[in-house]
Amino acid sequence: MRAAGKKFHFVGICGTAMGAVAAALRDRGFTVTGSDESVYPPMSTFLESKGIALHSGYRPENIPEDAEVIVIGNAMKRGNPEVEAILNRKLYYVSLPEVLKELFLRHRHNLVVTGTHGKTTTTSLLAWILIVAKLDPSYMIGGIPANLGKGALFNDSKFFVIEGDEYDTAFFDKRSKFVHYLPELVIVNNIEFDHADIFSDLEHVKTSFRHVLRIVPQNGMVLLNGDDPNCVEVAKESSAPIVEIGFSENCAQRISGATYGSNGSCFSLGDETFEVPLIGEFNVRNAAMAVSAARF
Image (cartoon, rainbow, N blue to C red; front, side, top):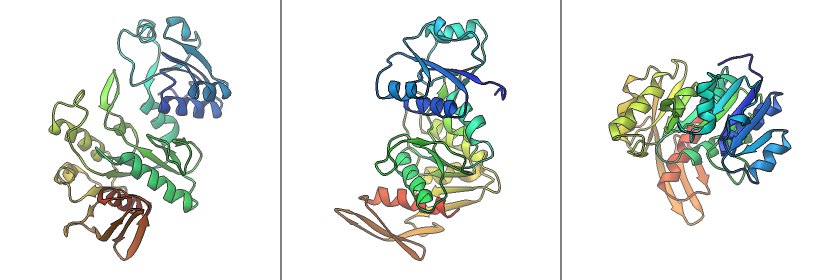
């Protein structure tokens, strides 16, 4: 990605992630414009408050003549008037995950939460643990946790907690988004067949998870659901240390003593006991993953 680019145009700017990154770039002094099919509050007012010029609808003339980097959203497809103009004019374009990688994640300790289910909850829990520990992490979550009040925060902390989606990156890059996130630690909550619009079968899904685990460095770590055979299988090719977490005896970090009530759950992990205001075994697993990642 061009390091010198200071003028960005976002195609599909009003998506939650696109808008958050566009605002973060504006806060860093970049010039940012954008367009979307539907421009309306609260995203439109949020972006306009940052000094970002917005266009409703997609038209070639929305793209500034001096735009240096075009960020094309995941939902954009061939036939979109701006996409076609970008290709015809041979403009420099990238995906949102590429922007995150080069301008926000490089040189950070990136904690990437993946899995078919539980990503948003586990990412939220991990971010909150680090905030309470006064580590002041950046984070990007696929939802808005009640206690955080927003789904993304970009600061200069060395820690970045990010929800790692296995969905594809863009129409021009069919790899999963999470392969761009420079993971130092990866959580794999579970792996099941999902997203039948882009994955042909379970094996196809597992291949994407293998890709991200192959790029975890040797001084990093992979935290797996040790009770899920699919998770254990995909980690075999990883060169990073692996810790299995779960209820079964084979898990290095074994969850025990779990109890569930109407107001939350309680469980032990190693010699420590934890209480969470979340109900059920699934959320105990999410919390155990977040605790283990925070210890890394």
